Structure formats: C-alpha cells, structure tokens
Length: 31
Image (cartoon, rainbow, N blue to C red; front, top):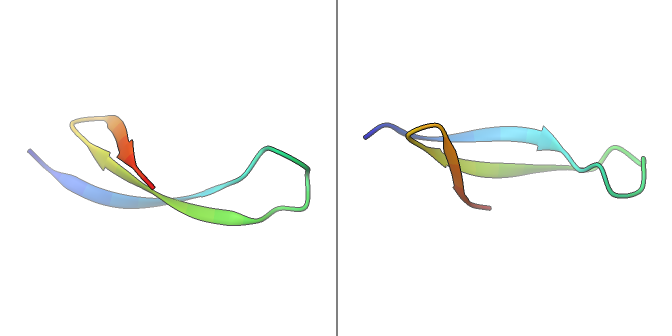
C-alpha cells in the first residue's frame, strides 16, 4: 500500500491553481 502526494492543477476556472492529491493504490483518497 503505497501512499503518495501528487501535485495537480485545478480545472475549475483556468487560472492554474494547484493542489495536492493523496493517492493510494492508484486512487485519489484525499486532498
């Protein structure tokens, strides 16, 4: 069970804000 943080870009408005997703077993489990 590998858990990691992946930085991604918010698609909401196009400004380009980023946030981190917590990924476990290939699935997003938190922010």
